Image (cartoon, rainbow, N blue to C red; front, side, top):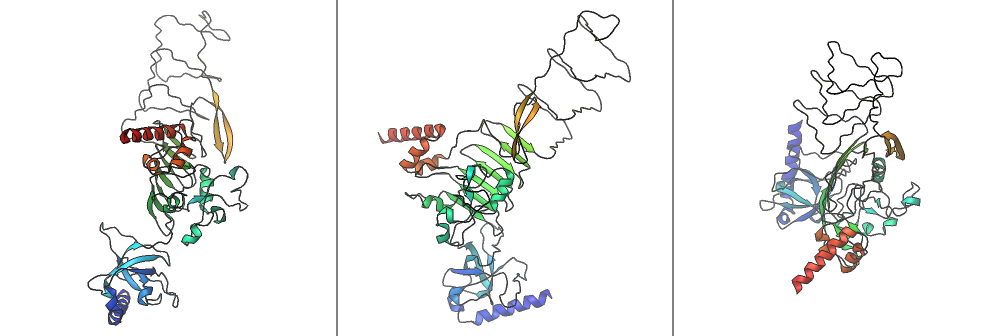
Length: 439
């Protein structure tokens, strides 16, 4: 069966060689349109040779979707990959003097540079979902990817909200301008009143997964776009490397777990499920200040051999219920000075009133449960990551790259300077250095 299909393909390629268009094949680079299914027979075009070649036709060579040509991927790195979306336009050429069986594709010929998973953020359209209304009136929304450049250049309010917003809403990052939707697009910098060179590059698969690299930007109105690299799946799992705000963020599609390394060296981990760690050797934990362990239910500590607790100063054990101290072997109590024991009842050899153990003070922390702000009433921890949206009191002011500052307009830098003290200091410093060089 496989051989008969291969023979059929080779026969088609032989007929191509006899066609008058063969003379034109070697004359340059052409645009070709990807074909997944034969519009007449509904046959799915799959490369029978197993090389992952792509079926496409060249309109300028009178090609049709009924009789496409197979194109192999030309790559200088040995990488393999093909756009699998029907109608994608690719750039192709024919090697060896224009042989129809030597067709190669090497690039996408995109009319709209859409390289952000879920679509580029813009002003939310009021569609009854809550986006663009009330407290979310000014919160940007990921927009449905455009199919033409003209559609992309429409006012954002006329562009449809993307389904991706359901993902960021579930994650809790919808209103987060650094971890939610992104403005990264080559069109962003070109559409300023004073156009700038594009700061964004990357690629996106037909299914919606994307690798986006943004050098950061400042608009003419002072809007700051951070310097970021994002790796995002179509379903919403993401890794974000933010250079301007200096953090690394990893989140799953549902937002039920995330990890962040912050600008001040803090490492935060949130897990809606269990957090499990295991080592087959030693596990060492060191804090130069305090270690706080707080459990909503029980704390269990067990060792297969000895358990030792040493304190250079006082050791306090306290419970609101009954305490049990039991040894299945001997028990040794050695007191270096005095031993005081006080009970509420009678104890033989009862001495002066014993000093009470120290009570650990508990307080409350902000929490997020089922997308609602709540309070954890009794806890001893000083910081507690929650489900997004999580407030980050130690985060830096909104920042971007020095490259973005150098290439922004004076109006944009001035407006940005008025909105962020830390960014303003950097702008003033670079302006000062620039003036000194001119002198």
